[in-house]
Amino acid sequence: MSGLGEGFGKVILFNEHFVVYGIPSVAAAIGDTTVAKVEDSEEFELLDNRPETPGYKKEKLEQQKDSLNRIFKAMNIDVEKNPVKITLEGDLLAASGLGASAASCVAIARALSKHFNLNLDDEQINNVAYEGEKGYHGNPSGIDNTAATYGGVIWFQRKPDGNIIERIKLKEPVEIVIGNTGKVADTKKAVAGVRERKEKYPEKYNQIFEEARKLVFDARNALEDFDIRRVGELMNKNHKLLQEIEVSSEELDLLVEIALENGALGAKLTGGGLGGNMIALTPEKDLQRRVAGAMEKEGYQVIKTTLGGS
Ligand code: MEV
Image (cartoon, rainbow, N blue to C red; front, side, top):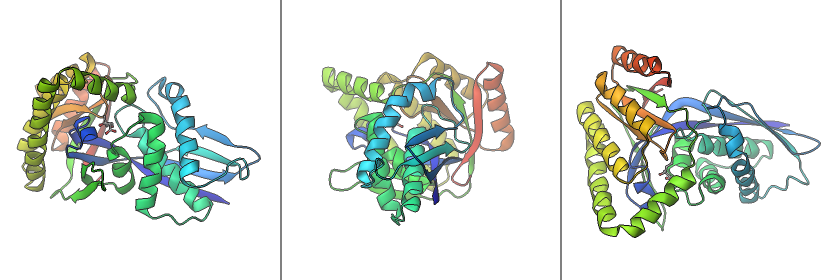
């Protein structure tokens, strides 16, 4: 018996970090995915064959074990009684900022559901993956596992009585470039840092958070109207707000600068920040190639993909 499962990688287009506090956000799945295979085995085994930013898998190993135990618990699976071998593969880079942990949680939950004939639907898979994400993040908002489960472009708002999850339709796919700083970052630490500073400087942070709340409604309109220029402008503003709450980094800012200098309509960090990845909005293949090439020339790894239809 074996089961296969898949989870999407994602980028956050608007409001990472702010989303933790109930402010709406927008995420988009990318074409790259993680695939999990579950097979019967003599003893529990995990084989992680995902491509990675060097050092990522080693650094996340303890969090990954914690996450797996939470997934087994959420699914009522006793791996001592029913040992399995889990193999992780797929083309999604295991790197900070691309939802690699969430994609793997979704892929594993789906593969376990198949292997043990549990027939979990997407909502149940999403809930299990959320439990798994706690191993990595502590107190995740749920945006990453939601994007990894459902794919597409998603409006997400964390609510105590049930999250709001809505699909945003794009008129056509839009090219983006994802630039990788090459630095592994700890989302848990980034989220904790924001909380500390928010408590220390409540007035300053409340003002920034209010701006983020207003901005994301404009962003949703711009996406739905397919006003890509406006989407880019709002991404730039969102990056400034993220700089103000101190989750950007020198490399992220440099990649944003390279992208804008080479014609990107907007650029910002994506995910937890402090390293990891950024995204640049580059409609049309030529612009995408130019921006990607400029980043590569400076020695950074890039992914060329599309939003809303890869
Ligand atoms: C990480 O991809 C996104 C954060 O907003 C954390 C979260 O939402 O759980 C930084």
